[in-house]
Length: 224
Ligand SMILES: [Zn+2]
Image 1: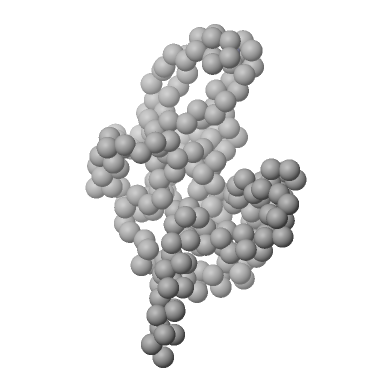
Image 2 (image 1 turned 90 degrees about the vertical axis):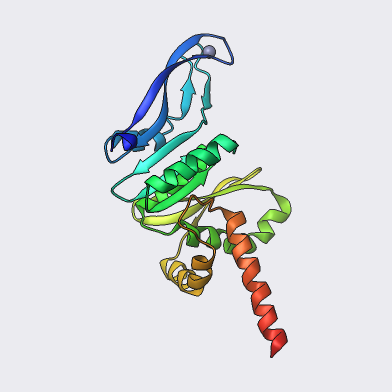
């Protein structure tokens, strides 16, 4: 079990702005079942972030790190860049761990995965809904550029935060009936496109699944 405990080491880091030297905790592994407060630290941008005590410069700190929620059987590996070493590490972890295994390349996506699991949603359904919602935002996107769309919740109300370049942040509520409908509609496809290994589940993944469905539907129609 020791391989699943929270683990960090101290590292020296010079502020990129003023050069002031800091010692900071670099987490190789975070087990939030063991250390619950670390989850809050991630969500509040206190953990994967750097703040200079000298000049107050702040910046996100993205590095290879494993997020484990043993209770929920959720594993998220954050790797800003994929490499042969990362692949090796993922293969090793895959043999060791069961449950949902995800890979992300930035902190926002890591936080989003945590929030989705908090609300007991399936991130695969969420990514499909994002692609669906984008179709509804076509008018807005004519005059503005959408930068990102992320799942969030307020109290018990799930929603999507949509980040526009000019207009700023907009909020779209997530309708539960709609969620259930999409979940049922894509159930088989989702199974076909999933594996019991580390998966990158993002809008690109959802588009592949949806595009494939359209191609398959077309084939069926052509045959009739
Ligand atoms: Zn500084």
